[in-house]
Image (tube, rainbow, N blue to C red; front, side, top):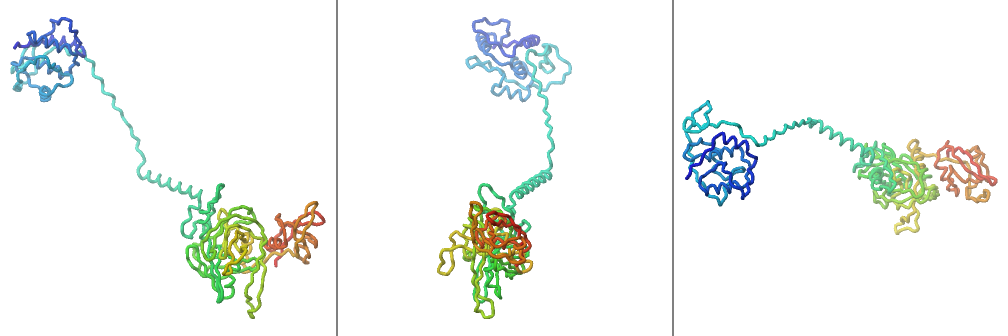
Length: 534
């Protein structure tokens, strides 16, 4: 085998300086360059060298150039032992950048590499082509290899500045503050959210106002708000008894109901009141007024968490307004029905027959109760008497008192046909305040006797209450009313019958001044009259 020629160091430097980053493709027709060093001297070896040179090979790295230089040496000459990583690379498969032999080219066997002994330390550089002590070649001298692009500089480090966030204590505080503000806004917009399932109401003990809606009345919210203020009343004496309803009027346990509900207990009877949550209390009579069919009773040892009803003026009611009735029809407590106001100022005449309380027990009396009532189509039945009538905001606008019926059942009780009547809240409040304060109620008097009549004003004819007689010293006399005058309106509301006039006057207390519209001599005029007490 021909021994390979080792190129001189100066030749290696010149070749490295002129080398391109990759070996150029050589045309097959061109003649071989005789100036290039050859690995072998035979024709077959040159052909193999020519074949390998025709293949483009990427530029070797520094480690690969060193490895090629080492393997080009004669196998008989000792070579310095490469580092362990270089030996492993030589024994392993070809790496990226190393020359790969073509499968058709002849292989050139190489002698095994014997690790040399440790070379002595020599600080002096060796001359070109000389060997170092120990038989090894010294490091070649010459110019550095050029022609390869300089390595790209490492990118400048990116410094990320992180702002220190709030501590967990501050974060927890912010979350709690957000929750409190959110709940506060919700409760401010929807106060009915404060209501709980127990009768205790957190709105200072008074039924909360349910926000009105332009779309539809939220009867679920109304019922939830007002139900704790409604009670069931049972009154009895030795021979009779009955069941009715009532509404809590104030925090001291006063309850407003109908006179005919508690009448069996007026002389020695008993009254029991059941709250909406089922608690049972005894009650006593504070005062009653048979003329208006109203009464006030008071709980014995009332609880501190009573829910008090809220009353509104019935003066602003309009026909068609939605209403809700709550009571104990036929003894069924906490029953809710809804409907509308079907008429206002409907004169209702109710006759109440009851056993006399006189000593002979034989005298019977029949008293006439006249009320300018609120007419409703919400279903009410016996047992609803004394119970409240609510508007869409949860305010009491009346006390249910009577119904219109076509027939009675086998037990003598009439059923609802959609015509119910309630005492207006303005009259209820006036009478209840008097009963709580003094135990009795006084009724306003106009000081006239009247009858139904018609009168012509211009080309129109009206129905009204014609004055028959004026009492001396009465408010009517002081106002200048006289016989023959026809009363057409009270505070702007039409008077169509004498009963309706009585119902209007009973709404006012003694000393109140009201405005009457009367017809006299074919013309109308307004007169101010001071109400007197009965």
